[in-house]
Amino acid sequence: MRAIAAAEHTDPFGRKTRVSRQTLDRWIRDWRAGGFDALVPSPRQTHQRTPVEVMELAVALRRENPERTAAGIRRILRAQLGWSPDERTLQRHFTRLGLTGPAADAGPSVFGRFEAARPNELWTGDDLCRYRHKSSYADGLFMPILVALCLFGSAAIRVRSA
Image 1: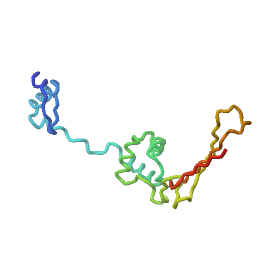
Image 2: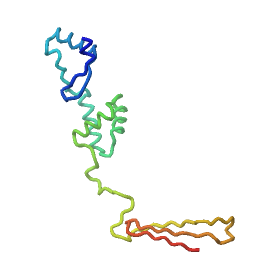
Image 3: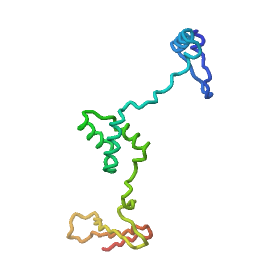
Image 4: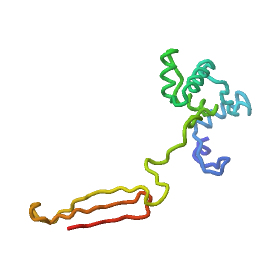
């Protein structure tokens, strides 16, 4: 048994793997108790654990206000019922029912704060002051630099003055 546990085996997907001694002992115990059927994994739980009434209330709250988040719905359920399912449980349920994404009555989505429809429509500017290595302003040796940038990306202008 130790030699089998120490060796590497190929799993059904072609990867090299090791099986521990405890796992081999458990498999042998199960096989002796119930035959091959005892080695087959048990099916997953398919019934819903959360009461249907709670999920229906959550869906009604979401349909009432589509902007309401799962965290907000969870707070409301906890206040009304004394407990609530996890936020992720609510999110998965809303996804299954297609209650995610932007609201149907929402306007067009905005992709950026500033958008230009054509070149030279939007510009921004910045006035910088670059000083020479003199100690005072009285020398008059500072140069304001004006940088103007077209937000559409077609031009950039830099103006220097003395």
